[in-house]
Length: 296
Image 1 (cartoon, rainbow, N blue to C red):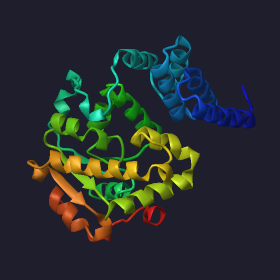
Image 2: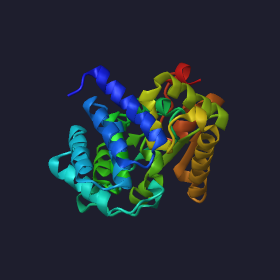
Image 3: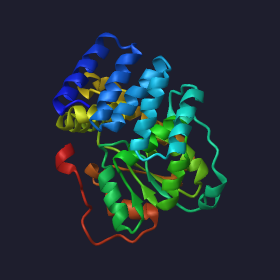
Image 4: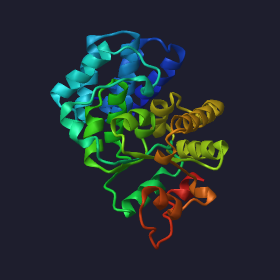
């Protein structure tokens, strides 16, 4: 076991080496193991998965399994995830996967749900606070749990996603923006809320400020979600991601307009619009503009 200082040095070394040799599996595996020792399990998984994509190795399998166990998977669950990694063909988008619903979850499908499907930094935390106040049993961002759901979705494993959906009434933040089509198909009585910013550049500025505030702690999260880490180097790509997502949502619900609400808190949308869509009484309190000072 290395000391904290030695681990930091090793992590920095492997990051630099990967920049020079981006197709060398052992570098990703070594970086993943150093991150594992530092208990940075989410980023460790990303590097182990990249290593496996380049070159399958029992050594990487073993380390990846240990990391899944640290994230709360059972022994059987971790082995199942590893099997899916080997069996699953590479998919470019989450939306392209077709899935089967376990029979034990079928009885829950008719219950109405509310899914926030706006990208991060669009007022999702405010939406969550509103839904909580309206007495929905709400599920927002929950760190490792959400990372785990995103990884499982990438592998085509939706059991835990359905387990979460069946335990709560409303949702925001990730992974829901990635799978709104599947959620609409499997939970047909649900409603969807797309939170947006007043313009693409405002959204990108919020992402950039968030990233620069958290620095390397945010790099693996951004790469996991957007496919790119350092937003300051990929402003056009980030803006395109944001605009494409919003347009695809609008196009998908074009003939289901009663199921989609688009809100922009900074442009004045408030309780009246939200409650009208949800059929709820308007609360006699100001809209909770959370995270406003941190993202503007």
